[in-house]
Amino acid sequence: MKLNQQQVIEIVGVSAVVISLAFVGLQLYLDRQVVIASQYSERSESMKSDIRMRLESESYMLYQTKLGEGSVRPEHWTEAQESLVESFNFTASEIVVFQADQQLYMYQFDNLYFQYKQGLLEPEDWIIYRNNLKTRMRNPIARAEFQSRYRTFASLVEIFPAIVEELDNE
Figure 1 (spheres, rainbow, N blue to C red):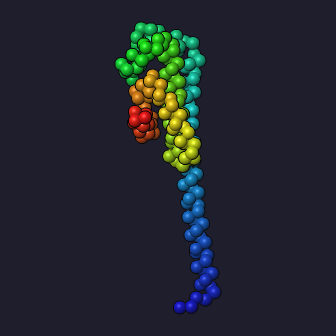
Figure 2 (tube, rainbow, N blue to C red):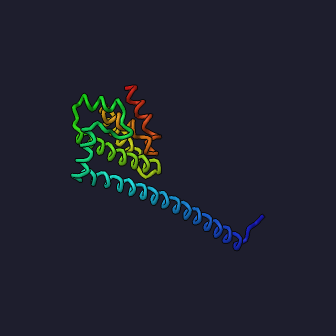
């Protein structure tokens, strides 16, 4: 079967249209991933801003300190956390600040893991962030805080148990 010049031009034209549509589809997919990651990051930053604002509020810190001095602890607080805090002689205000620091880190790590899963973070960078979390988890109080709260972060549910297992096997 011999193709004439008109048929060859039509085949090339159709192929070009198909290829360009595939490219547009890929670009739309990638743009959507970036927008989703950006929104996720903005929500994380908003939550972190709220935590920082509370830490800067004298009345909030006084309230939390009074609660802590009266042995009122958050719902997620465990006996392990209480014994660790007592062994380190933390004051009530130090507990509030420590918890806030852990929350800030959890939001940050959650966002980084989400970006990594979306392909927006280089694997080499992800390994560095993951190792930073492992280092933080070597602190028994930080580890207890993470273990009591990580289930509130969707991405941490996926990764945190594996990190704890790695630490336990070291």
